[in-house]
Image (tube, rainbow, N blue to C red; front, side, top):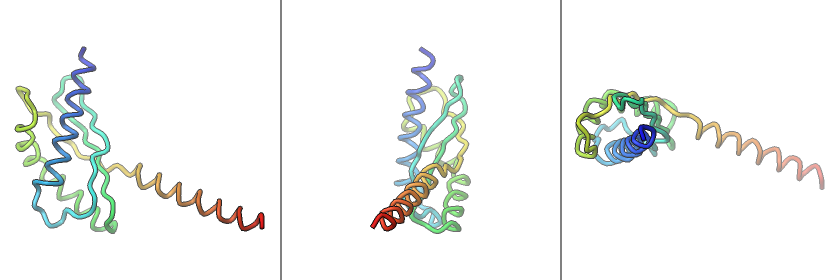
Length: 122
């Protein structure tokens, strides 16, 4: 039962943070495609680790966007109260998730090797 509650809260937090970051934050440093990839909630529902991915911007702009989101954590938490029907709102910790970047790089390398292999076969 507790596990289902944890999963449900994680899903609500993920949807809420995604909507808030993409539609309600007006910071000019936030550029690129920002995706919330995962939310991990502690069993007592008081702390949430939010993993996000920032695509479509240079590394410097990605770092600036991530810093802006981290600085807006308190504001995001206050807005999240509108989404969560609970007595309290979990404390948010943001983490940059680079799994998507690594996956894209791996796919690019596989495609490159595949092309070289095809050319050698000719």
